[in-house]
Image: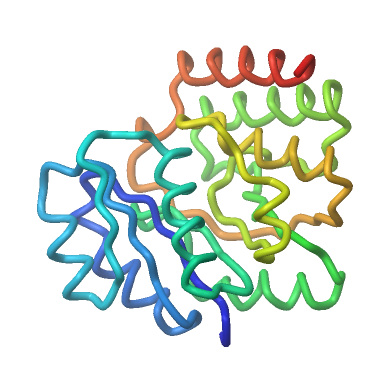
Length: 219
């Protein structure tokens, strides 16, 4: 817990952010919520729940929010950073699971891996299978679930995987940078709670991610 900071991107998450922050606080030293130009009461709820809240005046997307939060965590002295979604999709109690995996494997980063079972919406399952093979073919990435937002990495690893993507392509770019930097990274199975099948990456987002990955291949 010492030196472990959580970064939670949030855009209009007033429904779930209180529970996410309160549960996450049990396992980390500090919770940073990045309010990505929300138009609801996300900010006040997150602050009352005990989070440090950083606000984007304009929407910068998932990648932009994660970068803002991780940069702030580094400035505040974080030794390790865990990222998780603000919509309650991840179980904060599994932060301990990721920490144990990092310690046992001596990894620089641990990427959560959702089970591709009946609970995963079909569109997400198809998309995740595609990006698994696409990432392995283009970059030799060794994890099956390349799109989950539940991730743990050291502060030194963050400096090597720091991304430029502002959108959902951040998930893939992070892995690509980890592979290119020869970091030791592993995966760990996590539970996932699907509140809204339509939330998250769309087919159009998937096409954008695939195109961004192709451009990164030749960067």
